[in-house]
Image 1 (cartoon, rainbow, N blue to C red):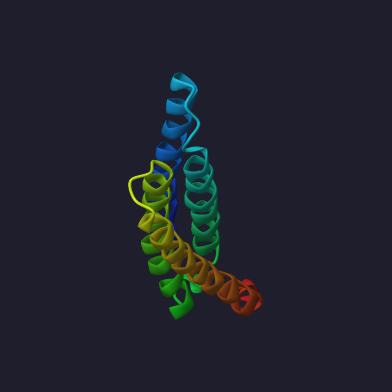
Image 2: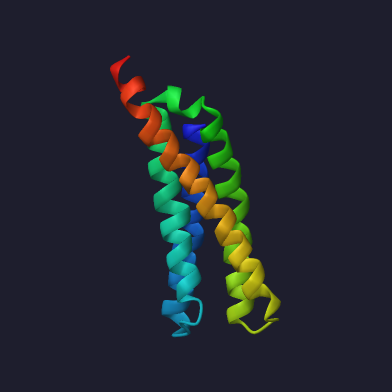
Length: 126
């Protein structure tokens, strides 16, 4: 699971950096929020989680890790696409959908935090 998260993180990094380059070239910074969230919650957060799951593979074998993986990877794209569509004034409904995606992502991240705080001492000793 750690390697999968690192690979997914790299995809988010490529997307986030591309957003940044687009904004720099066009001087249109309307999607800066999406750019920042993709880099922080996609690239950085998933990379750190992937590294921890790789360093401590027992963490990756817990049910909390599986819940984290799926909720983070379902919620984040929903949130990012919805924020972009809301900012671009496609429809105000996308603000609600972005919030739902955000809640799903946050719940997943809380499962990650719980997993690390509960299990890291145990797996680090083995």
